[in-house]
Length: 119
Image 1 (tube, rainbow, N blue to C red):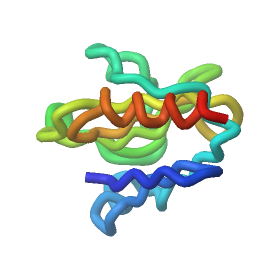
Image 2 (cartoon, rainbow, N blue to C red):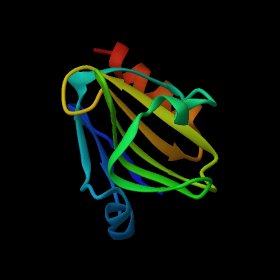
Image 3 (cartoon, rainbow, N blue to C red):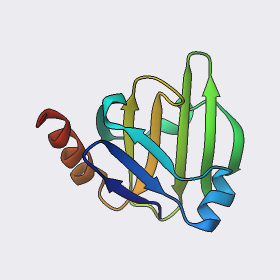
Image 4 (tube, one colour):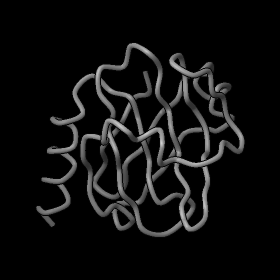
């Protein structure tokens, strides 16, 4: 499971070697100024992400990589076995949304939103 590190000025999503290989992507660095909020992803999230370019998709097993559709781009890392899915809503480039499978998305979303409003 990707490791999410909350820093004062950014969120870093650390990917292991195999996660990087599946996502065809390195660690994701998100500046705090780009984060609009965090939430538990909608159950139909997979229908909203668009086309995979590049990445890995084995339905029901793993969805990883960059997904695009007109006026929207997302980074996704989800595997079967991840209990919940965190959605980060962003402004700016390169992504509008980030979806990461985690153990407790509600608690992590609250922690991120609290950090954003504490400024």
